[in-house]
Amino acid sequence: MNTRLPDIVLFDLDGTLIDSVPDIATAVNAMRTSFGMPEVPVARVRSWVGRGLSTLMHRALTDDDDGVADPGDHEESIRVFRGHYRRCCAQHTSVFDGGEDMLSWLAASPIKVAIVTNKPTSFAAQIAKTLGIDRHLDVLLGAESHRPLKPDPSPLREAVDHLGGGSAWMVGDTRFDRDAAIAAGIPFIGVQLEGDQGRNIADIVDSDEPVFSSLRDLHDWLRVRLD
Image (tube, rainbow, N blue to C red; front, side):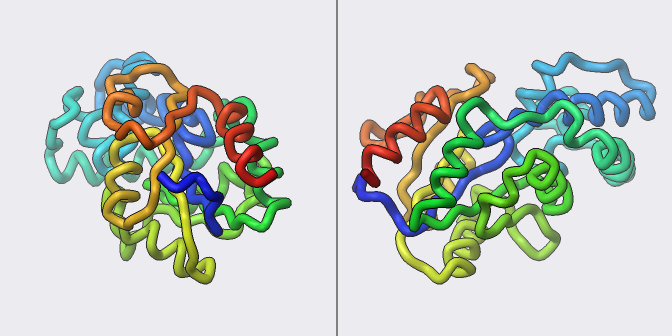
């Protein structure tokens, strides 16, 4: 990839900038309890996230990564999950080490910053505000009924267009982030901050696509290219 810094850096949210799984697991287990199902460990929920709320509920109801729940149960599970998650979504969620400094540095630079996430916009915005990272963002795009989810490239293109166009990079932790970036013609940077949850991004990137194990390392890499 061309390592000259772009006009815009697009970030995924969950697993890239923040560890949100503890709170997601709380809401998932509350939903499962309402269905008479046993709770599952946080590590199991961690392996389910990344494809948006609909897929998460299918997995949580079936205990199967490729499972498809009964349509009525699926609809109800989303309603129940949303109710619980709205109350707990920022209780134990945290910005990964180095993330605040990196975002603050980017915000003070000429580079524009966006979050493009498969998390519903209302939750993403609430979390960003509670954690204080919203002040570093130029735009946040989350899941909406009219907006396709990654790996569809449309949200990435929408964010770039919203910010006036120009060159962009995508930073993410899953193949869905990478696939969206490739489809949008945007260089991809991987981060692997939660350990190998069966989706080790380093296993699927090309040799010229960097992968970082901390946001501090990513920050240093970006800073060298600006300075």
